Image (tube, rainbow, N blue to C red; front, side, top):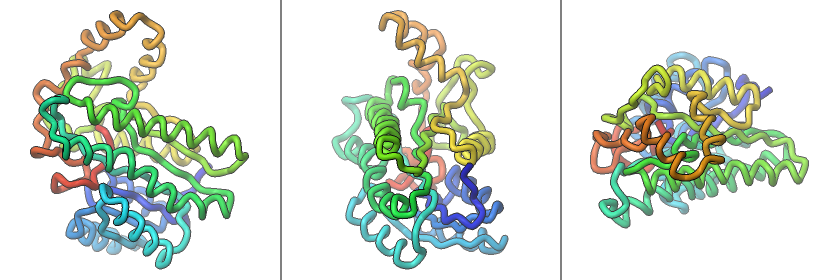
Length: 288
């Protein structure tokens, strides 16, 4: 079991939305919070609100698309807050454009935040966990890291990378007989604003998730050291679907409406930010 009480928990993309909701829940359980986000104003508001409830919290503005900024912020965090017990890589962004419509900058930013930032944050805080032979690294990936979707080519590719990152790291730690736990989270769309306009053909079968439900499942998965949290459960059938011929698999995705779920996507702007972001910049959160 992973306990939140008296653990130092670092969340990226935590100024609002899903990241802030997770912070509130963990803070209420006695966690010491370290919140990262590019939105300095949002961070200060979050810090003040959490502090009013007695939660121990520190905040650091950091652009998760900038490797040097991550390194500098991590060094400052370690110097001022000490070792991190639980790292939750919650930052993420989406452009919601076709491959040819997305700009070079869109694509590079998507991979910088959704994929490469995982490497830089984990490389900064994993050594301390290994030295203590305990810790927990959480990767908020996406159902898009399991199955592709039209108008999400760069996003899906970046989230596939996130899923692969977690799996390979898990096996690396297992081989070395380390007691650092990893958890990957793969939710379907979450009703936070990041994917405003997306549709699901069968809400009773493949629902758009509420943030409250998503956070409940995520935190339960972390507490119980679950290696993989996939929601809703129908998404798990994707693994079996991979055994089918490609044409059959694609037809099922079309029937379920997954392939057309982004047809009316609006997001929050030219670059739709993560659920917890107030501005479309590279510090956002979970795939929704």
